[in-house]
Length: 76
Length: 144
Image 1 (cartoon, rainbow over the protein chains, first blue to last red):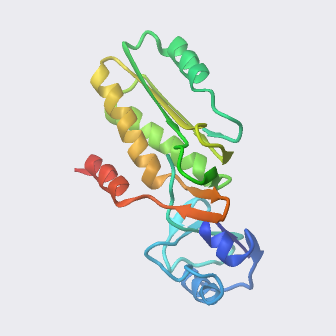
Image 2 (image 1 turned 60 degrees about the vertical axis):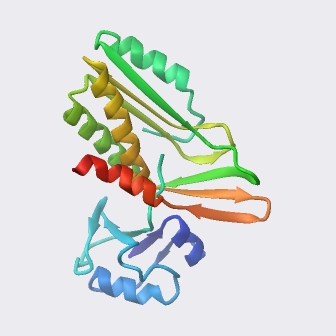
Image 3 (image 1 turned 90 degrees about the vertical axis):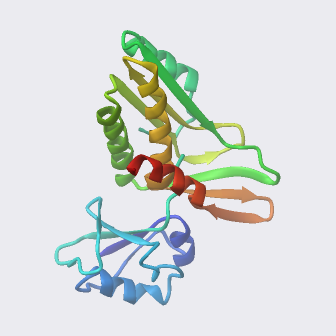
């Protein structure tokens, strides 16, 4: 499964994307990566995106090819 | 729309006004990169598919909410120099109030919802920019 990082998370991860071993849920994926990618563990600020839709921690990753982690935005 | 190349607000407005000149009222807003001590460039990152979808949805919401004839949003991404246009919004409606409000509404939502990430580059490093409390309060006005 591919994980993509945006904004400050890409800087924290040191890469824009990487392949990660299969895990069951978004929550597990977050737990797996949070120790290495500073800020990723902050559920209130960093949201997970699957197929261009925000998903919760319980969202199952069966068949999911890509997960994006999006930090707080700043458009305009 | 997401623009990787420089935005030309005058050209965008001219085209929009030509297509929607019969609406009655056209209001446009151009946001530029503020001159700020030490900042040499502003970098904007976007999501390859999601950013455009969110921006389009904000435009559609504005059209429905303010009964607009049309709404155009052009948002720049990539590396911008101080003074360069970063965002252009235009709204066309039958009466001026709706067009003024629609542009204000679109900007408030872009600031707080558009999946874009800004970083200021300085000679001595870089700093990520996030929506400020004032931006969030501005956006909350429309949910009342």
